[in-house]
Length: 458
Ligand code: HEM
Image (tube, rainbow, N blue to C red):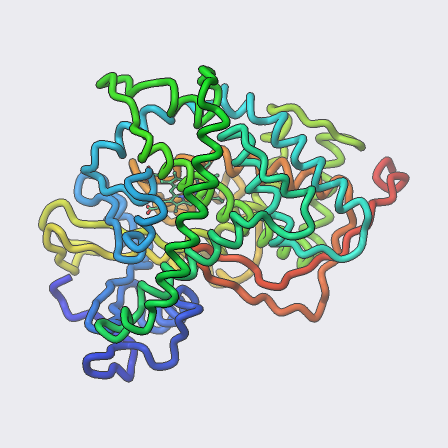
């Protein structure tokens, strides 16, 4: 942006705005700056400047698809060794973006969701089998097992045997390390940084090779299968409707890794935050539980259609994603010379980062944006809010392709857990948000026990 922007105090020449910030919490540090500096501000790190936008009016401008499009930031570019020109990391003009987007669209249709539903339910029941033993559960770990298994089996017919192992699948450990590596690379100092990270780079190469080998196995297992019922079937056996072009094998590998990562990290975080807020808010928990009992009855076996009937549970999820949108930022690049927020000129090619958790605390959300209130998402209050103030799934053509998948899966799982268990959080737990490109409540545990069915029936 051409106009001088507010920036954090104590800027150091050459180094920039690094005092008082931690490489482990870039999002939460930026949220603090947003609260102090207002709807737009700039941070400099080692000579690189990033403009952060979080005001509702300005985000509405950035959401205008005629003037702005997705920008692949340096942080996303660092994920290219993992995702290549897969959907998430592709530049807008790369032909494989539109090709894959068209080829994969049927995998996210209502029909496809109906097909995935029994698998999602079966995997949820595997989680219930382990929770039925009662006692303390590590919420983020269990939600990660569940969501990885769900995308693996519904998308690729591949099981990570997540519930049969004591430790998470090695794919998860390798993936977490590569995400951490990419996050560190995004803020390392020039020249000295690459020298210091030689060993870490070697480790990262080994992790990438391992991730690609898992994916090669996933493809091999389906080599002679001609079905087109899931993501992999569509990629192996169909072509782009508008051109007749197929995806090449390199790109298919990148798409699989993309979906395995994008398809589980964010949903598992969303479920974990929702459970955290349920445990913290007994009134909300009681209301959600009573909705599930009323709509599904005792011992539920919900059909696809019955999941969307859990209106209040869905609001709990929406509100958890308001406070902690688990993919916390997206970037927009000007396609023309323009002005945002009525006063900030942006030249064609300039870009800005939308800090979603700060947008979700804009004054349009009322004077107590930190409070957890699922009724913010009642139909009346939804209608009363301006457009473009709620963006947990990004915006425009490059918004999340898996939105309905995530919402169906998460509502189903929350409904099943609410129906079956008393959920008690540790009252001394203080929310600690872990940042690893996506957000999660770190170290959050629940004490679970089977509900007393007599009281459910009453
Ligand atoms: C609560 C869960 C989820 C959240 C909060 C979320 C959030 C997002 C956001 C914000 C973007 C846009 C990123 C950008 O503009 O740079 C995105 C893109 C994407 N998401 Fe999700 N996502 C979720 C679940 C899923 C699931 C379940 C899948 C797959 C089954 C998925 C696959 C993708 C893909 C492939 C893209 C890139 C789309 C494109 O550029 O064409 N996501 N997601």
